Length: 246
Image 1 (cartoon, one colour):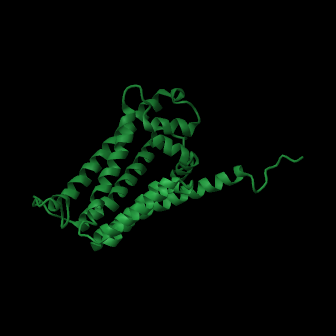
Image 2: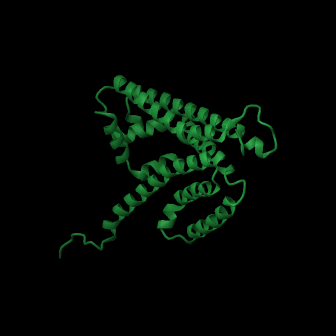
Image 3: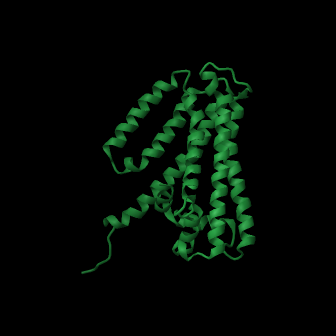
């Protein structure tokens, strides 16, 4: 009897489903800053609720795909709550906190791996790309991956503080204004949105490109190009990245 897997074999369907889930999560992640930016520029409560719904769907997408009852319940509850929020003057308020919370979380994810006895986050990525245990990396890669992890943590922490400062100072509807406190320095919602939903990503992208250019000179021959580097990162798979940030 032939042992080949047929089209109905569950193992055959796993990879396409995982790829579809990963691409869907990426699409939702890319959609959020656009929706949030448009909501901030237009002072549109409906767009703000839609941006928040995008986050809820992103967080719940995996258990939704697994048909978990709690995920569908949470999604329905979120939809009702966001529909109600969109009709109030506070609809844009949560958007001020999302960049602060997200960037702080990522900064913490980098920083916590710098503790004694931990493998620096960048070191884990380098070891995975090389297909070796972290202990097998060359000493110079050990030192560089720790320094780069520290640099990423510092940059992200600085961006989180900038996002918080702008969220406090935004007028109208900023955090201070919502508490009835006059901002010592007024920042328009458009200025806040351009930084939180656009410039944040530009700064991170520029840092990544500059660091890669330096790394190519520091460790020649490791990567053919930046595009090749990104392909290698993508080949690590969504499971690796989820485990890394958890």
